[in-house]
Image 1: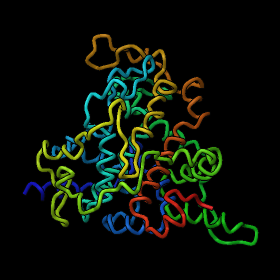
Image 2: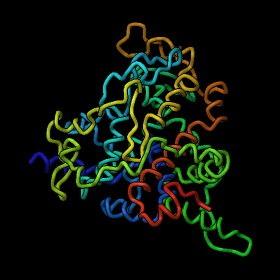
Image 3: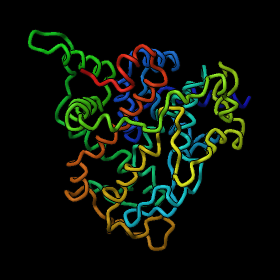
Image 4: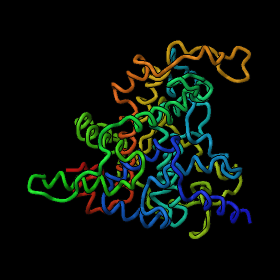
Length: 396
């Protein structure tokens, strides 16, 4: 009965509704969709239920939607990591002094990647949903620090409205960009003409095939065409590298099962996502043995490197995100809570203007999208296509 109830709850959330909080995840997933190998895309179609139309954007925010359910509350801590002694902007420490808990997004990414690589049926479906979401989360810097609950307790003003630092970065900055972007509102040309280079038309078709009339479609076109194939084109190879990954070290599929993953999903292929109790369920994210002296050991058997990716992103908390003058207590229960009239305004040239100038938000979503595509291509792409195009094929 319990598994039926959980399955019904999940089914009720299966059709995504766009909110600003979900936009960053959906944009990241759409960028990944654009860069999938055809064979990887076909496998995703087989893994996901038909109502998602093979689109990663449809599952990108799923993990946020279900974590408030009683059966899924244990997953809340898997959306972030809290480094010990980390207190931006005064002190940025990312694992050198340890982690407040080993049940965090770093190990979560490793284990659900193994699930996508090795499980079947509905088990693989839910592992894929978590993987798409967690890779999005790890590219949002405030998911990588525990100060003031990742900025959730730090009230600020933006465009005259009261918000908090976490919400600003998770949604408001993206929303403002979408509202004010003047270009790319019309679909890219996809029909061959004498004056259009064939490679440009092919690229346009690949981009437009991943879009579906969302409010953020122009933003995706801008990030991909101007960013990935413009501003950052020389950096892509470095971005997508996982230096420790060795395909030869992959575990045989027969050695990996839902039981060895700690009961992430039920044992039967057609069974809904099952929670067997918090202790059993959480073992899917149990820490593995770490190399002495390293804050976190990225795996050699699957093509993800969460620590390698996250460390420079975490540094943004000191370099960009936390204003130096945001030091007063903002917790609602704090007797010294800053009055609303005294909250600092961050929609300024010095703060928001600097973020826009350096295209920080856009770069983070491009990073996440390209890395997610590479992981899925490596896991799900055919040997023939991987040999021909590689795991990170760029559009012509």
